[in-house]
Amino acid sequence: MSLTSQYLSMFVICLLSWGHVASAAQERRNSPAADVVLSQIKHAFAQSAFHKAHPEYKVAIEGNTLTLTYHPRAWVVYGCSMSGEWSKTPNNETGPDSDGLILTVSAIDLKDAGQEQFAGRAEGLDLSGFDTYSPVSGNMHVIRNPYWSIFCCGQDFANQGVRISCNIEFNNRTDRKRVREAFAPIAACLADIDKRKPSRPSR
Image (cartoon, rainbow, N blue to C red; front, side, top):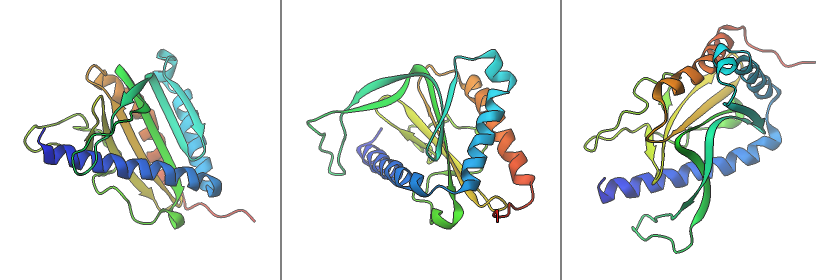
C-alpha cells in the first residue's frame, strides 16, 4: 500500500471514530422507530436458520447499535497521523480475530442523521465484492486497518424514518461465505421493513 493510501486510510479511520462518538451522543435521543427496527433485526437474526445452526455468533443491542460478533479479540494498535507520524502510545481496540467477524448495524432518526460523513459507504445492503481489494485501485468501500478490514454500507429507509449504517469488520481468515450467510437474515428483515407503510407517531 502506498503512503498516500495509508494516510487516507488513517484519515477515514479517524472519521469513523468520530462517527462512533457521534453515535454515542445519538443514543440519548434515539427515536422509537430506530429502536423498533433494531429489535426487529435482532429477533429476525435470533430466529434465523443460520443462528440456530451457528449459535456461537452472538448478537446484542446497545444504544442505537446492534452488534453481531464471532471471535472478537483485543488488539494493540498504533495510530498514524496525516503527516505520517506514528503515535508513541498504542490504543487498545476490539476487532475480529484472524477468523473473526464483527458486524454492526446502527439505526438513527433521519431527521437527525444529516449528511453521511463517510463518502466511501456503499449505498444499499449488497455485500457483493465486500472483500475485493486491488493494490492498484483499492476498494473505496473498504477501510484497511493494520490488522483487519472494514466494509461500510448503508441505506435510508424513508418509510420508517431511519438511516441504517452497517460496518462489516473481517480478517484474512474470516469465512467470506459465512459472512454473507450471517448478514442475509439482517438484509432480509430490512428489505421487509422497507416495504411497509410509513410509520406514524403514536398519540
